[in-house]
Figure 1: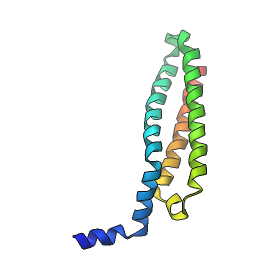
Figure 2 (figure 1 turned 180 degrees about the vertical axis):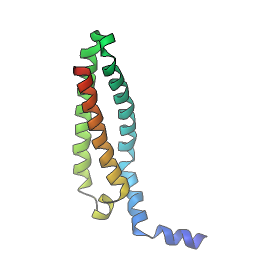
Figure 3 (figure 1 turned 60 degrees about the vertical axis):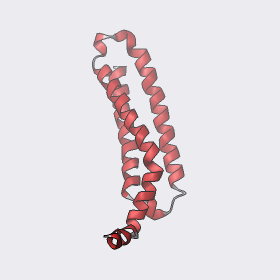
Length: 116
């Protein structure tokens, strides 16, 4: 069993994925909290006819969140360029990039719902 584990750990793709998870870990935690907040904003956007007085506050929050997400995307892409290619192309890195894109799309939808 120990030999199997040692052999498995030597596979380059496993090491690359492990390094990528270290790199993306904090970002993924942030993405999770963003998704939760965006879900709230989208829900409020759908129900805005009930509380029009909150529209400016929610729109301001969504725009601030949008700026934070955009900054995170730029930072992620910039910092990722410094990593070896096999780490950049690992599933955790690709998943993090897709998750950031998903946050942006959901946030645009929330802003659209709040703005109408």
